[in-house]
Amino acid sequence: MRQPSARPAAPSTLARGSLGVGYRAAHREALLGEVLPAEIQHLEIITENFLGPAPAPRETLRRLAARLPIVLHGVGLNLLGAEPLDERYLDAVARLADEVDAPFVTDHLCWTGSAGHAHFDLLPFPYTDEALELAAARAAHVQARLGRPFGLENVSSYVTFVESRMSEAEFTTRVVREAGCWLMFDVNNAVVSAHDHGGDPEEWLGLVDFSRVLQVHVAGHDRQADGLWVDTHDREASDETRALYRAAWRAGGPFPTLFEWDERIPPLDVVVEQLRRLVEAR
Image (cartoon, rainbow, N blue to C red; front, side, top):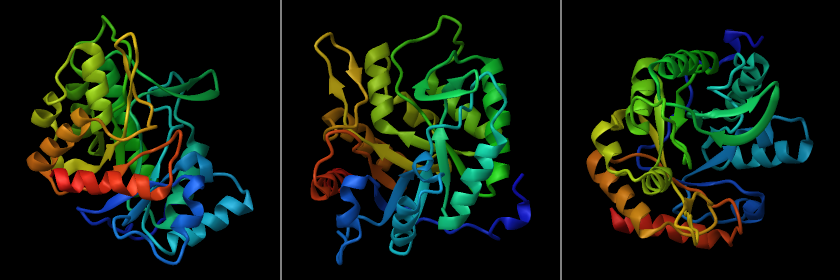
């Protein structure tokens, strides 16, 4: 097990109004080029892509970390899985966070594996008091193990459960409060889930403690022919997502903002234009 003495005395911090993009290999050369767009003030990496020993990704990470603050965003924690948390995985995440001096680490409030196998799908669960107690205890443990702020992201979901006793917004904000951890607020996920389940995404704004928001994610979604909205991260943000971002900024800004683009990845300047549009919309 990783020893606490290996942790830095305190992680670096990220400016509250910082703008960022998710690092994708398609943008490697542009991000390592001579001049960076002024709008890119930090990067977010997918944690699991850099946990292995392969030398090329590690060298890229070293060079990126020399240029910009880097935050970690995971998809493999399996916070609400049936098995205990993987302590070896947490050790590896903690070492990576120390290596890049990450201001914070985030993952998703969901389950992502079973029977010892990680599938990395961000799957929902019933919003019950029992699940809340488990999530809060585990999130507090993760934050203590990492030795730096740990944030939970709200996911997009396409099913609901009859067992649920509260809304996703209430559940998530209560977990954050009871764990003493932080929120990674994804406004696109809030919009998608609200549409698909017949809710109001602005419910979040009345419940979120914006002093506990580490970062806000913005992305695009697909509107399928059957009426379902799907969180695809393969296009610009919708008008509804930008509107919720604007309302969140006015309710609790400034906060760090990051635009995600994960499929059909365009040139970097197209992603940067999305950041510009968000700033103009505030």
